[in-house]
Image 1 (cartoon, one colour):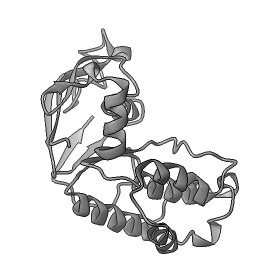
Image 2: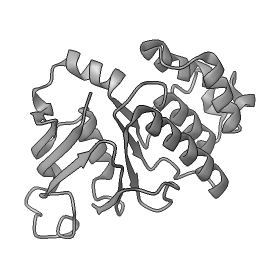
Image 3: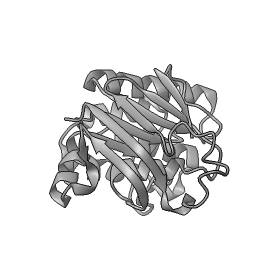
Length: 219
């Protein structure tokens, strides 16, 4: 279980030597001390190229090209073993990357079931009803390469939710959705976060997910 995420003067390596220039100068995150406490949720607003996807990758532990310290409940994440990361990513930390990372040759259900078999979190009935709620149930047996980007985004959201979590990282989760689907996705994510007593950390360049966040930080 993760109660707090702490960032202490974190800066991507690519920005080193540029500390007095844009885009770091107005940032609420880079080179700052930031604490996000569960179950408070946070929206991170960013311009393109300021490192929002990098930040999510740093917190999720799949990249380490930064200075400063990121800690979970006071423990530096750079010290975690592979086994610790596997446990965290199965039981405490969920992630929807901007790239979605779906398997194009697999069907919608196969993409979701790969995750759900690892976590044994959701029933088949929940998955099917959620696909119906997101208006993609008719695509359940279709390879995702034949879906629109907006449909793929909804599939990736369902897959991301197929686990227990304390923090949900979502990188531009509604960038390809219209207002109707934005609202539906937002309701689903809020419900799952409330069920888990979890925090949502969302990034946005333009289209913002329809959630009332406890705080907004500028990257």
